[in-house]
Image (cartoon, rainbow, N blue to C red; front, top):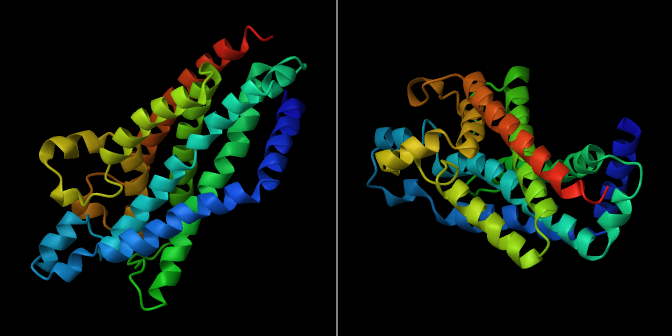
Length: 276
């Protein structure tokens, strides 16, 4: 099974490398958000918000842009996985998936190879957001301000948060892609999932500006859990802004991902089963 998965993963990566237009297009989204939304929406410029209130609203982040940058790292890790399932549908329409399913490769290998190849791009985009935000600060623009002494452990925690979040949503959207045959239906379903998940998270909204009911929902949102791991390590803001350490939030994120991968694997097996 390992050999089959490796071969299929190589095929998916080669297909991605041969489509530079898709790569450039995916890079434009985080760049535009950072240059337009992030630069334009700056709470500090309002002048009427006391520094203590602003810090509480931003969970210890020094500026809204810094708060927003951590949220954007989680945001792109989710949105970049949307097209993974769409590729499955187009492969079904063109008969490619049928030919792959007729080979000795198991359903688990087919699913796993697309998952491995699919998470590389969202992980890369998330770290692009962090790197570009740091660079903007040296260009006399709003940039990411890291107020913590980020060490190896912190860097590993941030990496794990982004990887687990990418794997979770890539698994979900892949399973939907295997279960649906029409692209229009697929995008309607994933948008019905994607937008509520992002808008009920703490990725973009200042935490202190949320009503209590939305804070309660956001506390259990997997995007929030991943973003809070990033913010704790970038801003050393665990107490008093966060009730738990980064590892507790990571554990919750891993539990979400494990449940989602299990559901996605079952759906993929059922979708690929009749073709075997």
